[in-house]
Image (tube, rainbow, N blue to C red):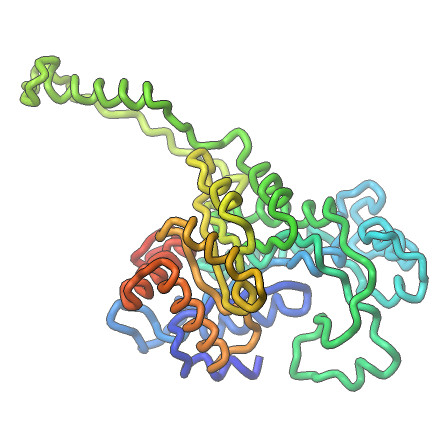
Length: 384
């Protein structure tokens, strides 16, 4: 939190700050109170954007998904706090392999009920009208940390937000993917209900992540017209314009003026209107899956130098970037430290994408900015 003071002097104009677990939800809200878009501030740039501000995002990351339990599950019968026995049974049921060491189980955090988190998140989204849902997702690789050793917590760096790994060894336990899906789906539904964009994490789970996301818009896909249907529609429009004469100058008498009935859908969506696949590590084939014209939400692909270009498999990221349409690509630092280091990572990935896409740097920066505005607001002019 002490690094918030560095944001006003950063070169990055607007940052999107994501929450991940119980301990940082309120901290993100505090950051939004100080620097959030929409607060009264006379500092404006030439485009009307307040400089050096943030868009908050509220969500529960898959790394911490085991710390949540479904209080609608008959086993818990709506209880808002688990007993010691219920806590150990919960962790045995959501971790794999199922832990047996009682001291490890008891050292894990007290699980939180879904309903409390979702209610709190809904309140944050009401309070901050441009806030996103994130960071959420699926991760088949991550192992939860070992318990703190005696005295370790007393020696920890208290400038860091509690709840993180902080150098602890990783255990052999992972969160079962079915439980991760349950936590993810609940948050996707909330994002749909509130009409908010969503930032999604996916590691070694591209297939199951696509299946889980597509489950939310199943039955609400966009209609994809066949070539024959498109030709028929084109011919019908031409017929109306020409009054059936084919010369393009049909009279008003021959072309009846009718108003097309537009059905306004008032029920909440079951899926976020816009989804960002953050630090995307999938293949070009996975990109193509998400580009199918029947997919209802707008899909964006975000890249970072720290994740996508810091290992030998960077060639895969370059191929994916080439496969992503120009107006669906985003950049990020994927870093928890504001200031010069974050600016550096952002510049690095912007230059890399412009190089791969063969964009002029200035044009590339402008396009990436417009993409981000459309992801956050659904528009390119910054108006919600």
